Length: 490
Image (cartoon, rainbow, N blue to C red; front, side, top):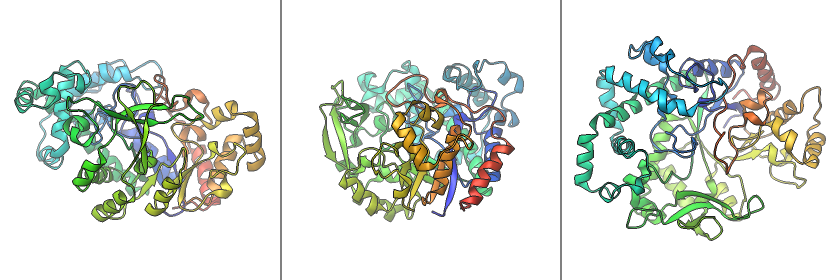
């Protein structure tokens, strides 16, 4: 990486009139803002279709795109909807929060109306041909879920759960319209995303994506390839992922994602993973892999457990996985999410891979000489003030232990005149880290109620949206001044 900077803000957080940020005009305006501000990276969260809890890290497919991000105005331009039809729906009362209920009850029926009017041609056929290996299973999975009132697939009837051929053929016949609708939404999603990416790249901005190491248990991925995951013969999870008890939680964290059968992946030359990464880089320019530690060793918990206490460490695929990935796909711009407890094994895996790790300033001031303190940064890393899982800087400054805030004040020479938040941003820009990423909320000096996610909680997460006009010329000039001062032109 060249010395550069970027902004972390998910597409859902863009402003707009239809209840959620989309790949429409507000996204193009944000690219223009990034370019004017001297920013070279736009980091977003995973873009898959979200399930219960609305987390982008829990998706019905690791390959599919989220239909909620489809822009309605672009469909109006295509003659598939009218402005009046779009404006006749209720999109939520608060323009600064995503209304996920409205996405399901209002947006999907509108998309269905556009689908029934469309007459896709050769481009659609080309999309189906190039994405056949995942799209058909995904569309069938979603159609059956709709028909089964959205219950998780391992509670379906035996013939559908275990993918008996006769049952699948019957479903394909009876649910054909819904299957075609699901395929059409994927075509529209990736067509809109490709245009946005092309525009961003033409304006000197790279799209920085994110994939979770694990997939959701209730997903097309696990239903179509149960042999690659820890499921029993009855088609239900046997081992699930999490982290053991630590000073954050006495019972650990039970994520519930099925663990991988890494030996099965190895037998295929990691074919499923190679395809996952290959397709991700058709969408993104740069990609962060979440929970990098899991490739060294992972915490596996029997599925019947209610907490993560009674799990055990198991070995992951290690450096062999990344070597074969490089051999198959070549040089890839991958960022390793190496936060949390760093064991010697993880440190060696990170060093052997050569991937940049992450440094988060909100973790730096616990009083120890830890790796997050700026004087311990290295060039081959990405520095953040905070991530999507952290409080905003203003929230952190208001809630962190007084000793930590005081240490940060002295270490970073923070002042009220500059504002403590901008002092943190300055420190990130000053860092020797090649890449500096700042969450948009920190530039806007927003408080805790605008944080993106509070880990281990359900509800009130993933909802924040930026106010219309907040990314203005004054802020752009302030960011650009940081770029010029600390030589982060990229």
